[in-house]
Image 1 (tube, one colour):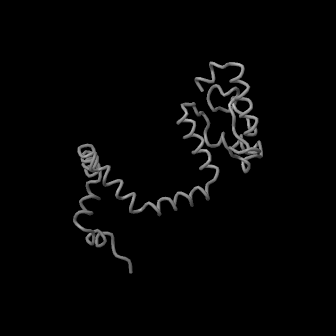
Image 2: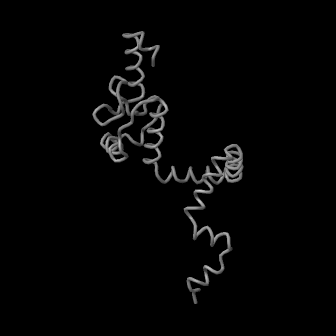
Length: 156
């Protein structure tokens, strides 16, 4: 027979009971502590990560294997942000372009693989400004553009 709700609550430690009853207050207190003790919080966070590093990595690899499209989209979005290029795709729009091309399985940055390239390497990643082409084509387009405009090569 299952325990009634109140008996389960009685089994909780006093600290957990207080936390459940004062959740917002507890979160505010923890947030304030983190702000007041930034260095200590960083050390604590790193220690927790180090203790669980292999599990975190294994979980991430499993998620990427089970969600290849979402993983590729997220990577593309973060790489665009790192390069200060606006990324205006939703996940569905991004997937539609790759599915229509039929080249998702052949994505990559090696010879013979396909990339999502911006027209003229200018503007954002957006539905009307990209096409799926081979990596070699994308590289040769960039080389031709730099030969025509040597000042652009300096700023790339």
